[in-house]
Structure formats: structure tokens, C-alpha cells
Length: 26
Image (cartoon, rainbow, N blue to C red):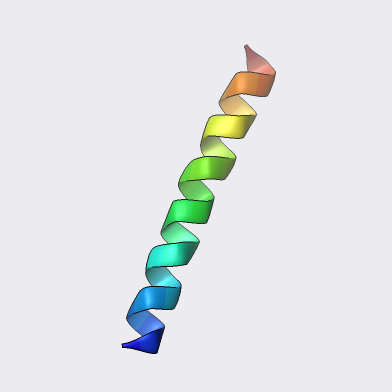
């Protein structure tokens, strides 16, 4: 369960990073 939650957090973090990078490019 901890591994699943950790993976979910990593996915959310990656998504947020992608959004921030896109905003920087814009």
C-alpha cells in the first residue's frame, strides 16, 4: 500500500513539474 501511495505521489509530482515547465515555456 505504501509503495502504491508513493507511486501516486510521484505521478502527481511529475504532472505538476510538467505544468510548471509548460508555464515557463509560455
